[in-house]
Image (cartoon, one colour):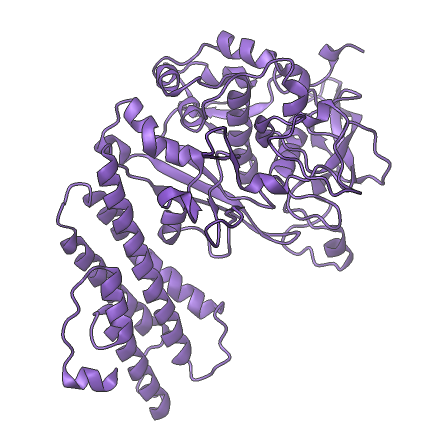
Length: 557
């Protein structure tokens, strides 16, 4: 049987997309630039949000591997003059041998060897599918078992890519992805409703195209699997048998899909058709160990080079190990803006993803965007909130990332934003404590519905103002007025949230009423920056002069 008879992710149409006109269709990767002038593609059209986000990673990975810009000038040139379908097709076809899904050997993201293990239900390719123990204990209440018994080849391909790229902890020997299980993904959207091609290119790093010699180092399924069962061998991007571009195509799980021919009635009812589908999969433990890929490597100049361009990183101390950020319960909002957008001086403790720092550092200037153009730039933040093996939720959020063409002004903006966020976190902490203490019981969990709702209300009341102020800081050199406006917004919002959470009613018992009044006074002293150590701390964070306290205020401190 020739290779042409098998399903190939480069040469076969399989990616569902939506055009600006609303028309939906299925394309092969090189068609991403089709009809750019008349009716461009604007979105992936999978029915699942994780598949849509994974498709961005897949396509950016293809571009970074087969059609990367050489340098900053080349990136800007291609932004202005996109490639034709034929140019992309020629570039992608050089690596197409690595993208067969269902041939007998060397299959996309599947183990080199045949695996001896029991077949698992095909639905367990989905990260949020119930695991074996969940099903056994009959606890699959929200993500039900047995929803389908087979997948189409396109669906299986994107499900497999999603699992291998974001692979969570899967039990003894089942490795996590090279960014750890359930990484956070950040994607730059240059402006609202931008053609999908521009979104992909805005996130594509500079590099050089893969050649035939690079293939086995980039695509690990083309060669015998480097297992880790005995020596616990760790793969490093600097290893001779590994290429750093494997960051897009990591294969931590040893998986083989099971294919079967299925016959179904034609939609017209005039006959039957046969289709190859995925009906199950096998897995063996101890695949490649990518633990070291969560952090940084060093180039010949000893400058840190972060391995995966789409995930922000942090470390708890200078000189410590770099770790990937992961989504947490509660979602993503402006409180996380600094973690996602701002890199600390000298990359000491926090680093935004390379695609974000590139956009803010040089890409926007290379294509001539000024501050007002950048106000339209958005950051998509997505990923699974994992609790070990269990996917609690798939989070997806957008926020503005306004920037400045002047690096000095960008630093002013970042400092202002970080101070506002630090102040908001202090207010939220005291707000939680005062609401909890005002319940009249000490067993109210910090994660209780009331406290969660109160924090969400505060964030909702203040979020738009935060983004408005970090935009205004680019024009207003006197930031003292903006700090005071932020303090005032937090003051009004925090007190309203407190009153909504613990209303003082006529029937409230005297002892509890006294406690509520004292807690509200504590919160008020904080947000007014008066009469308490907490208030003085907030004033220092916001660079606001601390008013001199009256004797009465000092007495209550």
